[in-house]
Image 1 (cartoon, rainbow, N blue to C red):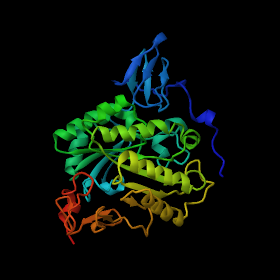
Image 2: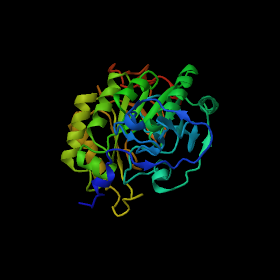
Image 3: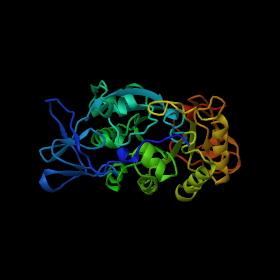
Image 4: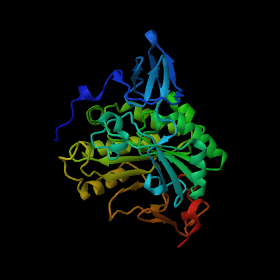
Length: 373
């Protein structure tokens, strides 16, 4: 089994991080904070619930205690803004074939040893200067509409750490007729979910493993809050899809994957999409080999054995990412790369062959819904 980071350095109990913010411009006071003794504040945006002393920042490095008030250092400060296919999130059962205007600020409340976006998510922690630009919520909405997007996605880094910006943008987006998407590690608190619930339509949640030891050593977090978030999202009416990146020797054992898939089927429902994908060496895990293709195929099989009806093989060039009817197996959506095309068998969100409703949202919308084969 590959060596793992020291858990004592990966899961701090409270923040003692000096703030790196040196700007003099206006800041935005953060929501989801409670005052504590001696000028400290407790951030309750994510499950770390950091106790932040004056002049310090939380684990995410972008929420700071300034004179006894919690402020966000990244409101409207975007490090990425792109018009992406929604399938890239990945979301396969939400507005298929449409465009998701995707934004992120710097910062993350996890520090995954395999982070693919470390240059922006771990910028503060690693001393990397992630270049940002100002993009207020109204300008995000305008850019999304100009790009022909159906939705706005809060993605690339962890949207919980910029929840104030995401919420303001999501509310304006909804007024403009846009859907809102989260691509998240699932470490939101119930308090955060109560705010996200009314404005978020769909989420892809990284369920990185079904092992608390993995979460503590590789991610710097715990498993239980992620499971609670997944259930909490469904309870609040958010459409949920789940992604698991298979890392050789760390989270790809068949017993663990079967248990994970069974949990999804039981707690979220058998028609919840599960995306399993290959790991490639990156960031602090460059000593591992890429995930064998056979491991991904086996995970797909295990998902089916667990009762899941929609299991996708993620980033395989030869992967079969078509969506089939959970009732009769008829192909309803065909995919080639990030291009999704509705087949003639999908009519008003239902299988024309057996009448079974395809689970998801916006299934009669978007570019993919407008084309038939």
